[in-house]
Image (tube, rainbow, N blue to C red; front, side, top):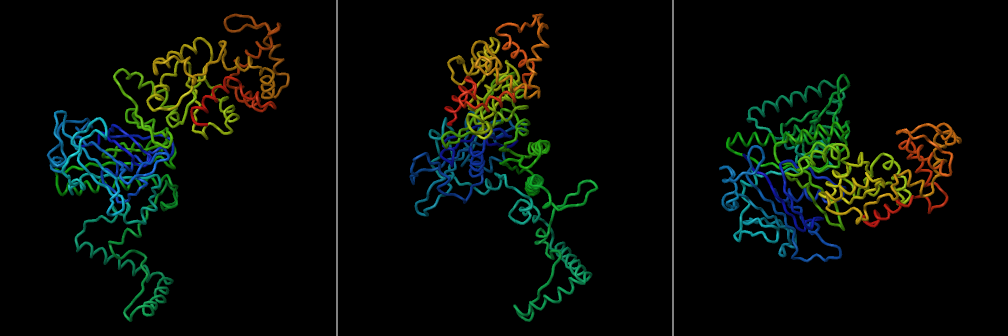
Length: 600
Protein backbone atom coordinates (compact mmCIF):
# COMPACT_ATOMS: atom_id res chain seq x y z
CA UNK A 1 0.00 0.00 0.00
CA UNK A 2 1.07 3.58 -0.54
CA UNK A 3 -0.28 7.01 -1.37
CA UNK A 4 -0.93 9.13 -4.44
CA UNK A 5 -1.96 12.64 -5.37
CA UNK A 6 -5.43 11.90 -6.71
CA UNK A 7 -6.59 15.46 -7.36
CA UNK A 8 -4.98 18.81 -8.02
CA UNK A 9 -6.46 22.29 -8.26
CA UNK A 10 -4.63 25.43 -9.30
CA UNK A 11 -5.73 29.04 -9.24
CA UNK A 12 -3.80 32.05 -10.54
CA UNK A 13 -0.46 30.29 -11.08
CA UNK A 14 1.52 31.65 -14.03
CA UNK A 15 -0.55 30.99 -17.19
CA UNK A 16 -3.09 28.89 -15.28
CA UNK A 17 -6.04 30.92 -14.06
CA UNK A 18 -8.05 27.87 -13.06
CA UNK A 19 -7.43 24.11 -13.19
CA UNK A 20 -9.18 21.12 -11.62
CA UNK A 21 -7.86 17.64 -12.47
CA UNK A 22 -7.95 14.06 -11.31
CA UNK A 23 -4.63 12.21 -11.54
CA UNK A 24 -3.70 8.57 -11.95
CA UNK A 25 -0.36 6.94 -11.18
CA UNK A 26 0.83 7.55 -14.77
CA UNK A 27 -0.24 10.78 -16.45
CA UNK A 28 0.64 12.00 -19.94
CA UNK A 29 0.35 15.75 -20.58
CA UNK A 30 0.05 16.81 -24.20
CA UNK A 31 -0.61 19.93 -26.22
CA UNK A 32 1.14 22.53 -28.30
CA UNK A 33 4.11 24.59 -27.15
CA UNK A 34 3.52 27.47 -24.75
CA UNK A 35 0.18 26.19 -23.47
CA UNK A 36 1.18 25.81 -19.80
CA UNK A 37 2.37 22.21 -19.53
CA UNK A 38 5.65 23.18 -17.84
CA UNK A 39 3.82 25.51 -15.45
CA UNK A 40 1.60 22.62 -14.42
CA UNK A 41 4.59 20.36 -13.70
CA UNK A 42 6.31 23.09 -11.69
CA UNK A 43 3.14 23.76 -9.71
CA UNK A 44 2.97 20.11 -8.62
CA UNK A 45 6.60 20.18 -7.53
CA UNK A 46 6.08 23.42 -5.63
CA UNK A 47 3.16 21.95 -3.70
CA UNK A 48 5.04 18.76 -2.79
CA UNK A 49 8.59 19.92 -2.00
CA UNK A 50 8.38 23.71 -2.10
CA UNK A 51 10.72 26.20 -3.76
CA UNK A 52 12.58 29.37 -2.86
CA UNK A 53 12.46 30.70 -6.42
CA UNK A 54 9.29 32.78 -6.18
CA UNK A 55 8.34 36.13 -7.66
CA UNK A 56 5.40 38.13 -8.93
CA UNK A 57 5.78 36.34 -12.29
CA UNK A 58 4.31 33.27 -10.56
CA UNK A 59 0.97 35.08 -10.23
CA UNK A 60 -1.48 34.93 -13.13
CA UNK A 61 -2.39 38.36 -14.48
CA UNK A 62 -5.24 38.77 -16.94
CA UNK A 63 -5.15 40.99 -20.00
CA UNK A 64 -5.12 44.62 -18.83
CA UNK A 65 -5.11 43.59 -15.17
CA UNK A 66 -2.92 45.34 -12.60
CA UNK A 67 -1.39 42.97 -10.04
CA UNK A 68 -2.81 43.66 -6.60
CA UNK A 69 -0.55 42.95 -3.62
CA UNK A 70 -3.23 40.76 -2.06
CA UNK A 71 -3.50 38.43 -5.06
CA UNK A 72 -2.00 34.99 -4.54
CA UNK A 73 -1.47 31.76 -6.46
CA UNK A 74 -3.02 28.64 -4.94
CA UNK A 75 -2.09 25.00 -5.55
CA UNK A 76 -4.22 22.37 -3.80
CA UNK A 77 -3.31 18.68 -3.78
CA UNK A 78 -5.39 15.82 -2.39
CA UNK A 79 -3.37 12.86 -1.12
CA UNK A 80 -5.18 9.54 -0.63
CA UNK A 81 -4.09 6.03 0.40
CA UNK A 82 -3.95 3.45 -2.38
CA UNK A 83 -3.82 -0.31 -2.74
CA UNK A 84 -1.05 -2.18 -4.54
CA UNK A 85 -2.97 -1.89 -7.83
CA UNK A 86 -3.16 1.90 -7.54
CA UNK A 87 -6.84 2.06 -6.56
CA UNK A 88 -7.85 4.43 -3.76
CA UNK A 89 -8.62 2.83 -0.39
CA UNK A 90 -9.97 4.23 2.88
CA UNK A 91 -7.15 4.17 5.41
CA UNK A 92 -3.51 5.20 5.50
CA UNK A 93 -0.96 2.65 6.69
CA UNK A 94 0.54 3.06 10.14
CA UNK A 95 3.66 4.50 8.53
CA UNK A 96 1.83 7.26 6.67
CA UNK A 97 -0.35 7.93 9.68
CA UNK A 98 2.81 8.54 11.68
CA UNK A 99 4.20 10.82 8.95
CA UNK A 100 1.15 13.03 8.44
CA UNK A 101 -0.24 12.78 11.99
CA UNK A 102 -3.66 14.11 12.90
CA UNK A 103 -2.42 17.60 12.11
CA UNK A 104 -2.85 16.81 8.42
CA UNK A 105 -5.04 13.69 8.16
CA UNK A 106 -8.78 14.23 7.78
CA UNK A 107 -10.99 11.28 8.68
CA UNK A 108 -14.31 10.87 6.90
CA UNK A 109 -16.84 8.15 6.08
CA UNK A 110 -15.64 8.11 2.45
CA UNK A 111 -12.03 7.60 3.51
CA UNK A 112 -9.07 9.41 4.98
CA UNK A 113 -7.18 12.04 3.03
CA UNK A 114 -4.56 14.74 3.36
CA UNK A 115 -5.35 18.04 1.69
CA UNK A 116 -2.46 20.47 1.27
CA UNK A 117 -2.85 24.03 0.07
CA UNK A 118 0.27 25.80 -1.16
CA UNK A 119 -0.14 29.57 -1.30
CA UNK A 120 2.29 31.83 -3.14
CA UNK A 121 1.78 35.33 -1.84
CA UNK A 122 3.53 38.59 -1.11
CA UNK A 123 5.08 38.99 2.34
CA UNK A 124 4.65 42.71 3.00
CA UNK A 125 7.39 42.79 5.63
CA UNK A 126 10.01 41.00 3.54
CA UNK A 127 8.68 42.57 0.32
CA UNK A 128 9.10 39.24 -1.46
CA UNK A 129 6.91 36.32 -2.40
CA UNK A 130 6.80 33.35 -0.03
CA UNK A 131 5.30 29.87 0.02
CA UNK A 132 2.83 29.07 2.77
CA UNK A 133 1.22 25.65 3.28
CA UNK A 134 -2.14 25.08 4.95
CA UNK A 135 -4.24 22.02 5.77
CA UNK A 136 -7.49 21.51 3.84
CA UNK A 137 -10.11 19.94 6.11
CA UNK A 138 -12.98 19.76 3.62
CA UNK A 139 -12.24 19.17 -0.06
CA UNK A 140 -15.29 20.84 -1.57
CA UNK A 141 -16.33 21.45 -5.17
CA UNK A 142 -13.77 24.18 -5.77
CA UNK A 143 -10.78 26.01 -4.34
CA UNK A 144 -13.05 28.82 -3.21
CA UNK A 145 -15.45 26.58 -1.27
CA UNK A 146 -12.91 24.23 0.34
CA UNK A 147 -12.57 24.58 4.12
CA UNK A 148 -9.13 25.15 5.65
CA UNK A 149 -7.81 24.30 9.12
CA UNK A 150 -7.75 27.34 11.36
CA UNK A 151 -4.73 26.18 13.31
CA UNK A 152 -1.35 26.30 11.62
CA UNK A 153 -0.18 22.87 10.44
CA UNK A 154 3.58 22.37 10.27
CA UNK A 155 5.02 20.69 7.19
CA UNK A 156 7.15 18.45 9.38
CA UNK A 157 10.52 16.85 8.71
CA UNK A 158 9.02 13.39 8.21
CA UNK A 159 6.84 14.79 5.44
CA UNK A 160 9.82 16.49 3.82
CA UNK A 161 11.76 13.21 3.90
CA UNK A 162 8.95 10.90 2.82
CA UNK A 163 7.36 13.10 0.11
CA UNK A 164 9.81 13.47 -2.75
CA UNK A 165 9.32 15.13 -6.15
CA UNK A 166 11.83 15.14 -9.00
CA UNK A 167 11.56 17.48 -11.96
CA UNK A 168 13.47 17.02 -15.21
CA UNK A 169 13.11 19.68 -17.87
CA UNK A 170 13.68 19.25 -21.59
CA UNK A 171 17.26 20.57 -21.37
CA UNK A 172 18.65 17.67 -19.32
CA UNK A 173 22.13 16.62 -20.42
CA UNK A 174 24.34 14.06 -18.67
CA UNK A 175 27.47 15.94 -19.82
CA UNK A 176 26.36 18.99 -17.83
CA UNK A 177 25.21 16.76 -14.96
CA UNK A 178 28.70 15.29 -14.64
CA UNK A 179 30.10 18.76 -13.98
CA UNK A 180 27.73 19.52 -11.10
CA UNK A 181 27.79 17.91 -7.67
CA UNK A 182 24.20 19.12 -7.20
CA UNK A 183 22.87 17.17 -10.19
CA UNK A 184 21.39 13.69 -9.74
CA UNK A 185 24.54 12.22 -11.27
CA UNK A 186 26.76 14.24 -8.93
CA UNK A 187 24.69 13.27 -5.92
CA UNK A 188 24.54 9.58 -6.71
CA UNK A 189 28.26 9.30 -7.57
CA UNK A 190 29.33 11.16 -4.43
CA UNK A 191 26.99 9.14 -2.26
CA UNK A 192 29.23 6.47 -0.76
CA UNK A 193 29.29 4.73 2.61
CA UNK A 194 32.86 3.69 3.37
CA UNK A 195 34.74 3.21 6.59
CA UNK A 196 37.61 5.58 7.38
CA UNK A 197 40.01 2.68 6.91
CA UNK A 198 38.67 1.89 3.45
CA UNK A 199 38.82 5.59 2.43
CA UNK A 200 42.45 5.79 3.57
CA UNK A 201 43.34 2.60 1.69
CA UNK A 202 41.76 3.81 -1.57
CA UNK A 203 43.34 7.26 -1.32
CA UNK A 204 46.79 5.76 -0.73
CA UNK A 205 46.36 3.65 -3.86
CA UNK A 206 45.19 6.67 -5.85
CA UNK A 207 48.24 8.63 -4.71
CA UNK A 208 50.51 5.74 -5.71
CA UNK A 209 48.93 5.49 -9.17
CA UNK A 210 49.30 9.26 -9.68
CA UNK A 211 53.00 9.10 -8.82
CA UNK A 212 53.52 6.10 -11.08
CA UNK A 213 51.83 7.84 -14.04
CA UNK A 214 53.93 11.00 -13.67
CA UNK A 215 57.22 9.14 -13.19
CA UNK A 216 56.51 6.91 -16.20
CA UNK A 217 55.91 9.79 -18.60
CA UNK A 218 59.05 11.97 -19.00
CA UNK A 219 57.12 14.99 -20.28
CA UNK A 220 54.84 14.94 -17.22
CA UNK A 221 57.78 14.51 -14.88
CA UNK A 222 59.58 17.47 -16.48
CA UNK A 223 56.44 19.59 -16.38
CA UNK A 224 55.95 18.74 -12.73
CA UNK A 225 59.52 19.84 -11.97
CA UNK A 226 59.14 23.16 -13.82
CA UNK A 227 55.78 24.22 -12.35
CA UNK A 228 56.72 23.21 -8.81
CA UNK A 229 58.77 26.40 -8.64
CA UNK A 230 55.58 28.45 -8.81
CA UNK A 231 54.62 27.27 -5.35
CA UNK A 232 57.54 29.04 -3.70
CA UNK A 233 57.06 32.15 -5.82
CA UNK A 234 53.39 32.74 -5.10
CA UNK A 235 53.25 31.05 -1.72
CA UNK A 236 55.56 30.22 1.14
CA UNK A 237 58.73 28.09 1.17
CA UNK A 238 56.60 25.05 1.93
CA UNK A 239 54.06 25.64 -0.87
CA UNK A 240 53.92 23.10 -3.70
CA UNK A 241 52.12 22.73 -7.02
CA UNK A 242 51.53 19.23 -8.36
CA UNK A 243 49.99 17.44 -11.32
CA UNK A 244 47.20 14.99 -10.52
CA UNK A 245 46.22 12.80 -13.50
CA UNK A 246 43.65 11.21 -11.19
CA UNK A 247 41.81 12.56 -8.16
CA UNK A 248 43.73 11.66 -5.00
CA UNK A 249 40.76 12.00 -2.62
CA UNK A 250 37.66 9.84 -2.73
CA UNK A 251 35.51 12.97 -2.22
CA UNK A 252 36.83 14.36 -5.53
CA UNK A 253 36.56 11.15 -7.52
CA UNK A 254 33.39 12.27 -9.36
CA UNK A 255 35.24 15.24 -10.88
CA UNK A 256 37.28 12.97 -13.11
CA UNK A 257 34.49 10.57 -14.00
CA UNK A 258 33.30 10.01 -17.52
CA UNK A 259 30.75 7.77 -19.18
CA UNK A 260 31.86 5.89 -22.26
CA UNK A 261 29.91 3.86 -24.78
CA UNK A 262 31.09 1.13 -27.12
CA UNK A 263 28.94 0.05 -30.04
CA UNK A 264 29.84 -3.49 -31.09
CA UNK A 265 33.34 -3.65 -32.51
CA UNK A 266 33.58 0.13 -32.86
CA UNK A 267 35.88 2.27 -30.78
CA UNK A 268 34.88 3.46 -27.33
CA UNK A 269 33.65 7.06 -27.23
CA UNK A 270 32.95 9.30 -24.24
CA UNK A 271 29.31 10.28 -23.73
CA UNK A 272 30.14 13.89 -24.67
CA UNK A 273 30.69 12.72 -28.26
CA UNK A 274 27.25 11.16 -28.50
CA UNK A 275 24.05 12.96 -29.53
CA UNK A 276 21.74 14.90 -27.24
CA UNK A 277 19.15 12.13 -27.34
CA UNK A 278 21.52 9.59 -25.80
CA UNK A 279 22.83 12.12 -23.29
CA UNK A 280 19.30 13.05 -22.23
CA UNK A 281 18.37 9.39 -21.89
CA UNK A 282 21.37 8.64 -19.68
CA UNK A 283 20.52 11.67 -17.55
CA UNK A 284 17.10 10.16 -16.80
CA UNK A 285 18.64 6.78 -15.97
CA UNK A 286 20.98 8.42 -13.43
CA UNK A 287 17.90 9.92 -11.75
CA UNK A 288 16.38 6.44 -11.55
CA UNK A 289 19.62 5.17 -9.97
CA UNK A 290 19.65 8.06 -7.50
CA UNK A 291 16.07 7.37 -6.38
CA UNK A 292 16.71 3.62 -6.08
CA UNK A 293 19.78 4.35 -3.95
CA UNK A 294 17.72 6.62 -1.70
CA UNK A 295 15.07 3.95 -1.22
CA UNK A 296 17.63 1.30 -0.35
CA UNK A 297 19.17 3.54 2.31
CA UNK A 298 15.76 4.39 3.74
CA UNK A 299 14.72 0.74 3.99
CA UNK A 300 18.08 -0.14 5.52
CA UNK A 301 17.36 2.36 8.30
CA UNK A 302 13.73 1.31 8.74
CA UNK A 303 12.24 -1.78 7.09
CA UNK A 304 8.71 -0.41 7.58
CA UNK A 305 9.48 2.93 5.94
CA UNK A 306 7.67 3.99 2.77
CA UNK A 307 8.35 6.83 0.38
CA UNK A 308 6.15 8.73 -2.05
CA UNK A 309 7.95 9.69 -5.25
CA UNK A 310 6.61 12.03 -7.91
CA UNK A 311 8.43 12.26 -11.24
CA UNK A 312 7.55 15.24 -13.41
CA UNK A 313 9.36 15.13 -16.73
CA UNK A 314 9.30 17.30 -19.84
CA UNK A 315 9.53 15.82 -23.31
CA UNK A 316 11.39 12.55 -22.66
CA UNK A 317 11.38 11.97 -26.42
CA UNK A 318 13.59 14.98 -27.17
CA UNK A 319 16.28 14.12 -29.78
CA UNK A 320 15.29 10.43 -29.90
CA UNK A 321 14.02 8.45 -32.90
CA UNK A 322 10.51 6.90 -32.62
CA UNK A 323 11.66 3.41 -31.59
CA UNK A 324 13.93 4.84 -28.88
CA UNK A 325 11.05 7.06 -27.71
CA UNK A 326 8.91 4.00 -27.19
CA UNK A 327 11.64 2.19 -25.24
CA UNK A 328 12.30 5.20 -23.03
CA UNK A 329 8.60 5.64 -22.27
CA UNK A 330 8.43 1.96 -21.37
CA UNK A 331 11.28 2.52 -18.89
CA UNK A 332 9.52 5.58 -17.48
CA UNK A 333 6.32 3.52 -17.08
CA UNK A 334 8.25 1.07 -14.89
CA UNK A 335 9.57 3.93 -12.79
CA UNK A 336 8.63 3.49 -9.14
CA UNK A 337 6.21 6.23 -8.13
CA UNK A 338 3.63 8.60 -9.57
CA UNK A 339 4.48 10.11 -12.94
CA UNK A 340 3.43 13.19 -14.88
CA UNK A 341 5.14 13.33 -18.27
CA UNK A 342 4.63 16.05 -20.88
CA UNK A 343 5.21 15.14 -24.51
CA UNK A 344 4.94 16.28 -28.11
CA UNK A 345 5.45 12.78 -29.45
CA UNK A 346 2.67 10.79 -31.18
CA UNK A 347 4.78 7.69 -30.44
CA UNK A 348 4.63 8.35 -26.71
CA UNK A 349 0.91 9.16 -26.80
CA UNK A 350 0.27 5.91 -28.67
CA UNK A 351 1.72 3.99 -25.68
CA UNK A 352 -0.38 5.79 -23.10
CA UNK A 353 -3.88 5.13 -21.81
CA UNK A 354 -6.52 7.61 -22.96
CA UNK A 355 -7.93 7.92 -19.45
CA UNK A 356 -4.49 9.07 -18.25
CA UNK A 357 -4.07 11.88 -20.78
CA UNK A 358 -4.30 15.56 -19.88
CA UNK A 359 -4.70 18.01 -22.75
CA UNK A 360 -3.44 21.61 -22.60
CA UNK A 361 -4.41 24.39 -24.98
CA UNK A 362 -4.42 28.17 -24.75
CA UNK A 363 -7.24 30.67 -25.21
CA UNK A 364 -6.61 34.40 -24.87
CA UNK A 365 -3.38 33.85 -22.95
CA UNK A 366 -4.96 31.40 -20.48
CA UNK A 367 -4.12 27.72 -20.15
CA UNK A 368 -7.16 25.54 -20.76
CA UNK A 369 -7.02 21.98 -19.46
CA UNK A 370 -9.25 19.03 -20.34
CA UNK A 371 -9.25 15.27 -19.81
CA UNK A 372 -10.70 12.33 -21.69
CA UNK A 373 -14.12 11.52 -20.24
CA UNK A 374 -14.44 7.82 -19.58
CA UNK A 375 -17.71 6.04 -18.94
CA UNK A 376 -19.18 2.56 -19.02
CA UNK A 377 -21.16 3.31 -22.18
CA UNK A 378 -17.97 4.28 -24.06
CA UNK A 379 -15.88 1.11 -23.70
CA UNK A 380 -16.25 0.17 -27.37
CA UNK A 381 -15.78 3.80 -28.43
CA UNK A 382 -12.56 4.05 -26.42
CA UNK A 383 -11.10 1.08 -28.22
CA UNK A 384 -12.05 2.50 -31.61
CA UNK A 385 -10.76 5.96 -30.69
CA UNK A 386 -7.41 4.50 -29.72
CA UNK A 387 -7.23 2.35 -32.86
CA UNK A 388 -8.42 4.97 -35.36
CA UNK A 389 -6.91 8.14 -33.88
CA UNK A 390 -4.32 7.74 -31.14
CA UNK A 391 -2.44 4.80 -32.61
CA UNK A 392 -2.17 6.17 -36.15
CA UNK A 393 -3.09 9.89 -36.21
CA UNK A 394 -2.06 11.15 -32.79
CA UNK A 395 -0.90 14.47 -34.30
CA UNK A 396 -4.61 15.36 -34.16
CA UNK A 397 -4.24 15.75 -30.39
CA UNK A 398 -1.59 18.46 -30.80
CA UNK A 399 -3.50 20.57 -33.32
CA UNK A 400 -4.73 24.11 -32.72
CA UNK A 401 -7.56 23.13 -35.10
CA UNK A 402 -8.33 20.12 -37.27
CA UNK A 403 -9.96 19.79 -40.67
CA UNK A 404 -11.49 16.35 -41.13
CA UNK A 405 -11.97 15.02 -44.65
CA UNK A 406 -12.99 11.64 -46.00
CA UNK A 407 -10.08 10.58 -48.14
CA UNK A 408 -6.57 10.98 -49.44
CA UNK A 409 -7.56 13.28 -52.33
CA UNK A 410 -8.74 16.06 -50.01
CA UNK A 411 -5.84 15.42 -47.64
CA UNK A 412 -3.41 16.06 -50.52
CA UNK A 413 -5.22 18.99 -52.14
CA UNK A 414 -6.41 21.05 -49.18
CA UNK A 415 -2.89 22.01 -47.96
CA UNK A 416 -2.18 23.50 -51.42
CA UNK A 417 -5.27 25.70 -51.23
CA UNK A 418 -4.56 26.45 -47.57
CA UNK A 419 -1.17 27.93 -48.41
CA UNK A 420 -2.75 30.08 -51.12
CA UNK A 421 -5.42 31.40 -48.74
CA UNK A 422 -3.38 31.88 -45.55
CA UNK A 423 0.07 32.45 -47.04
CA UNK A 424 1.61 29.57 -45.09
CA UNK A 425 1.40 25.81 -44.66
CA UNK A 426 -1.27 24.40 -42.30
CA UNK A 427 1.33 23.26 -39.78
CA UNK A 428 2.60 26.85 -39.46
CA UNK A 429 -0.71 27.68 -37.78
CA UNK A 430 -0.90 24.37 -35.91
CA UNK A 431 -3.73 23.15 -38.16
CA UNK A 432 -3.97 19.45 -39.02
CA UNK A 433 -5.74 18.28 -42.18
CA UNK A 434 -6.65 14.68 -41.52
CA UNK A 435 -7.98 11.97 -43.76
CA UNK A 436 -10.31 10.03 -41.45
CA UNK A 437 -10.11 6.92 -43.64
CA UNK A 438 -13.72 6.61 -44.76
CA UNK A 439 -17.16 8.16 -44.40
CA UNK A 440 -18.04 6.33 -41.20
CA UNK A 441 -15.00 7.29 -39.13
CA UNK A 442 -15.90 10.80 -37.99
CA UNK A 443 -17.11 9.83 -34.50
CA UNK A 444 -13.73 8.87 -32.92
CA UNK A 445 -12.18 12.17 -34.00
CA UNK A 446 -15.17 14.25 -32.95
CA UNK A 447 -15.30 12.50 -29.58
CA UNK A 448 -11.70 13.44 -28.81
CA UNK A 449 -12.21 16.94 -30.20
CA UNK A 450 -15.10 17.38 -27.78
CA UNK A 451 -13.25 16.02 -24.74
CA UNK A 452 -10.04 17.95 -25.45
CA UNK A 453 -11.75 21.10 -26.75
CA UNK A 454 -9.97 20.98 -30.11
CA UNK A 455 -11.60 23.25 -32.73
CA UNK A 456 -12.79 21.01 -35.56
CA UNK A 457 -14.08 21.41 -39.12
CA UNK A 458 -15.55 18.92 -41.56
CA UNK A 459 -15.17 19.08 -45.34
CA UNK A 460 -17.56 16.45 -46.70
CA UNK A 461 -18.76 15.17 -50.05
CA UNK A 462 -22.41 15.84 -50.84
CA UNK A 463 -23.44 12.26 -51.60
CA UNK A 464 -26.32 10.92 -49.50
CA UNK A 465 -24.17 8.32 -47.75
CA UNK A 466 -21.54 10.91 -46.84
CA UNK A 467 -24.14 13.37 -45.55
CA UNK A 468 -25.78 10.70 -43.44
CA UNK A 469 -22.45 9.73 -41.84
CA UNK A 470 -21.80 13.37 -40.94
CA UNK A 471 -25.33 13.76 -39.59
CA UNK A 472 -25.00 10.65 -37.43
CA UNK A 473 -21.54 11.44 -36.04
CA UNK A 474 -22.26 15.08 -35.19
CA UNK A 475 -25.62 14.14 -33.70
CA UNK A 476 -24.22 11.31 -31.58
CA UNK A 477 -21.23 13.26 -30.23
CA UNK A 478 -22.54 16.82 -29.96
CA UNK A 479 -26.31 16.22 -30.05
CA UNK A 480 -26.61 18.86 -32.78
CA UNK A 481 -27.88 19.06 -36.34
CA UNK A 482 -24.85 19.39 -38.58
CA UNK A 483 -26.73 21.73 -40.94
CA UNK A 484 -26.87 24.39 -38.21
CA UNK A 485 -23.07 24.43 -37.79
CA UNK A 486 -20.91 26.70 -39.90
CA UNK A 487 -17.83 24.52 -39.25
CA UNK A 488 -19.35 21.67 -41.28
CA UNK A 489 -18.94 22.25 -45.01
CA UNK A 490 -20.88 19.84 -47.23
CA UNK A 491 -20.61 19.98 -51.01
CA UNK A 492 -23.87 20.77 -52.77
CA UNK A 493 -25.85 18.97 -55.49
CA UNK A 494 -24.61 15.58 -54.36
CA UNK A 495 -21.11 16.42 -55.61
CA UNK A 496 -17.89 14.81 -54.53
CA UNK A 497 -14.62 16.81 -54.58
CA UNK A 498 -13.89 16.27 -58.29
CA UNK A 499 -17.45 17.08 -59.38
CA UNK A 500 -17.35 20.25 -57.29
CA UNK A 501 -14.27 21.44 -59.16
CA UNK A 502 -15.89 20.69 -62.51
CA UNK A 503 -19.16 22.40 -61.56
CA UNK A 504 -17.17 25.45 -60.38
CA UNK A 505 -15.75 25.88 -63.89
CA UNK A 506 -12.28 24.36 -63.56
CA UNK A 507 -12.63 21.69 -66.27
CA UNK A 508 -10.09 23.08 -68.73
CA UNK A 509 -7.55 23.84 -65.97
CA UNK A 510 -7.98 20.27 -64.68
CA UNK A 511 -7.48 18.77 -68.14
CA UNK A 512 -4.37 20.89 -68.64
CA UNK A 513 -2.96 19.79 -65.25
CA UNK A 514 -3.56 16.11 -66.00
CA UNK A 515 -1.98 16.32 -69.45
CA UNK A 516 1.07 18.07 -68.02
CA UNK A 517 1.33 15.43 -65.30
CA UNK A 518 1.14 12.63 -67.89
CA UNK A 519 3.59 14.56 -70.11
CA UNK A 520 1.23 14.16 -73.05
CA UNK A 521 -0.75 17.12 -74.37
CA UNK A 522 -3.21 14.77 -76.09
CA UNK A 523 -3.64 12.49 -73.07
CA UNK A 524 -7.25 13.52 -72.35
CA UNK A 525 -8.38 13.20 -75.97
CA UNK A 526 -6.72 9.79 -76.17
CA UNK A 527 -8.53 8.76 -72.99
CA UNK A 528 -11.90 9.68 -74.54
CA UNK A 529 -11.16 7.70 -77.70
CA UNK A 530 -9.91 4.72 -75.70
CA UNK A 531 -12.84 4.55 -73.26
CA UNK A 532 -15.67 5.49 -75.66
CA UNK A 533 -18.06 2.56 -75.89
CA UNK A 534 -16.47 0.59 -73.05
CA UNK A 535 -18.51 -0.44 -70.05
CA UNK A 536 -18.21 1.00 -66.58
CA UNK A 537 -18.71 -1.02 -63.43
CA UNK A 538 -22.36 -1.98 -63.32
CA UNK A 539 -22.54 -2.64 -67.05
CA UNK A 540 -23.31 0.91 -68.25
CA UNK A 541 -21.75 1.73 -71.61
CA UNK A 542 -19.70 4.92 -71.79
CA UNK A 543 -20.95 7.47 -74.30
CA UNK A 544 -19.00 10.70 -74.55
CA UNK A 545 -20.57 11.81 -77.87
CA UNK A 546 -22.96 14.41 -76.47
CA UNK A 547 -22.86 18.01 -75.23
CA UNK A 548 -21.81 17.00 -71.74
CA UNK A 549 -19.49 14.24 -72.92
CA UNK A 550 -16.18 15.93 -72.10
CA UNK A 551 -17.34 16.70 -68.56
CA UNK A 552 -18.46 13.12 -68.13
CA UNK A 553 -15.12 11.85 -69.45
CA UNK A 554 -13.21 14.18 -67.14
CA UNK A 555 -15.26 12.95 -64.19
CA UNK A 556 -14.47 9.34 -65.06
CA UNK A 557 -10.77 10.11 -65.50
CA UNK A 558 -10.54 11.98 -62.18
CA UNK A 559 -12.31 9.21 -60.33
CA UNK A 560 -9.91 6.70 -61.88
CA UNK A 561 -6.85 8.70 -60.76
CA UNK A 562 -8.20 10.46 -57.66
CA UNK A 563 -5.01 10.35 -55.58
CA UNK A 564 -2.70 10.52 -58.59
CA UNK A 565 -4.11 13.79 -59.92
CA UNK A 566 -5.02 15.54 -56.65
CA UNK A 567 -1.72 17.42 -56.24
CA UNK A 568 -1.12 18.51 -59.86
CA UNK A 569 -4.72 19.71 -60.24
CA UNK A 570 -4.60 21.74 -57.00
CA UNK A 571 -1.23 23.22 -57.96
CA UNK A 572 -2.59 24.19 -61.38
CA UNK A 573 -5.62 25.93 -59.89
CA UNK A 574 -3.64 28.08 -57.44
CA UNK A 575 -1.26 29.14 -60.24
CA UNK A 576 -4.01 30.74 -62.34
CA UNK A 577 -3.59 34.37 -63.30
CA UNK A 578 -6.99 35.34 -61.92
CA UNK A 579 -6.46 35.37 -58.14
CA UNK A 580 -10.20 35.24 -57.45
CA UNK A 581 -10.39 31.84 -59.18
CA UNK A 582 -7.53 30.10 -57.42
CA UNK A 583 -9.55 28.56 -54.61
CA UNK A 584 -12.77 26.60 -55.28
CA UNK A 585 -15.84 28.19 -53.62
CA UNK A 586 -16.58 25.55 -50.98
CA UNK A 587 -12.94 25.33 -49.96
CA UNK A 588 -12.81 29.11 -49.66
CA UNK A 589 -15.92 28.93 -47.47
CA UNK A 590 -14.16 26.37 -45.27
CA UNK A 591 -11.09 28.58 -44.84
CA UNK A 592 -13.17 31.69 -44.16
CA UNK A 593 -14.92 29.92 -41.30
CA UNK A 594 -11.61 28.48 -40.07
CA UNK A 595 -9.98 31.92 -40.05
CA UNK A 596 -12.86 33.41 -38.07
CA UNK A 597 -12.72 30.65 -35.46
CA UNK A 598 -8.97 30.37 -34.93
CA UNK A 599 -8.19 34.06 -34.85
CA UNK A 600 -6.86 34.64 -38.36
